[in-house]
Length: 110
Image (cartoon, rainbow, N blue to C red; front, side, top):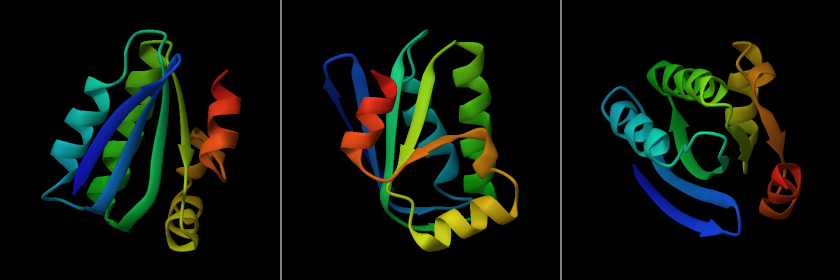
């Protein structure tokens, strides 16, 4: 699993690739929370995530809670059909703002 960060204007874009599982979820959470400034705007691109385990779902939920506590805005983009189905079936999708593309995600944060 790899997380690459860049900033475009007021938005921090975190591109995630690989598997988010029990082994990589702590690293994922640490890196995402590191990019989550108080009242910040974070676009989490999951388009290259190939697998998301229950530990990955938990890390996403904890990230959502932390973003809420920091009054930051968090948008997910690039969800594959498998990720979207898993997040929907577990009820996790309702916690997040989800957009189809980076451009749509940036627009939702501006």
